[in-house]
Length: 283
Image (tube, rainbow, N blue to C red):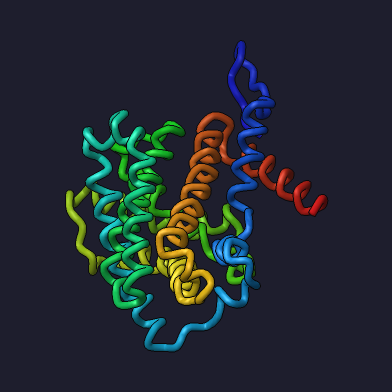
């Protein structure tokens, strides 16, 4: 519960009906079925056809492509998003264009398969990051603040399959808490140095935490494009689901952050947990 000072006394604040509805929508976005489930439903096939272990050489390619994609996205999150031209209204109105571009890059991946991942994934990840940033800005984030850029990057850590997010660090707030210290260190480093060194320990740790989760969804994307019936849909269709998955997470994430700025973290988390329990009870 958050409090506000009125007439020299502290009064408890509760979420308005409108904000409670917004939080409920955010919770549903953040707790919705995994990307693998969404793509399997699109293909009309069991999720097992999409999510399975990759051979070691393929896993290595995915891991390297994921690492490279996040390194590029980190630079964008800390520096390019702070450019006033990107943070203006044109940037927001261009979110649909970002989706189209990401789908186009996915079509390349679908056409050329795993060999194109090293080229396609950094491009589509950067494009998605800009679309995520547009959502962040719509929800009141100041993109001139490096912490807002890092919050955009954190969205990539929120999309892992539910089947692979079991344990105490599996839910939305736990993932945020896990990333919080690293985000502070990286933001402070960027402000102090004015530039990033990819080998800096704080940067390596932060990117590794995100990569371990983002890589799961990238693996699911690769498998979806490899399944024959999904392949008939084309890489663009798979990437559309990929983009929409992270945009949904971004809308939920930045709605929660907006409400936290109004009501405080504790009040928003208590209400989120209550809404989540109610959803589980009716499932």
